[in-house]
Length: 215
Ligand SMILES: [Fe+2]
Image (spheres, rainbow, N blue to C red):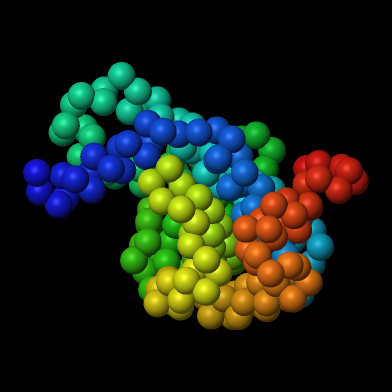
């Protein structure tokens, strides 16, 4: 089996192992981190709040994606069409459009996999062509994914996460990345020695669990 085929099968296994609780937790972590980064950047409270909403909903298109795969797991040609995975940001946008969300929230979700150097999807936008909210979500999403356990690997430690992100710095808006680094640094100082995993279970989840009203 070729490397590309093996990658395709592994990616499909990840889809089939779709776990709503994992996805929800990821959304909460991204939501609270995005709120904190936006706040660190000095953005208005209303914008921070919109980012919290976008962070919670950014991967909701994956729910639709499972429908495309479901029942067709045996079709190798379909399985190898990894572009289906790449449809989730557009599917999420289409799902939420017309439901009262602001353009800021919708565009943040649609473009949350765009990379700053233009190598992302769905539209290969680059630099400030990418809406601000999407650029913030991109950083927070990558951090949340790398610092969490996944079905196919354990969470990376904080130092490895930061090294991996710096290796891929071309993907990120530098101003946002620096604000993100300050948030992580300040959180680690405020937290215990176990760093990120503890933080993602406390501070970053706190925004939605303070009891002062859920979005
Ligand atoms: Fe995503």
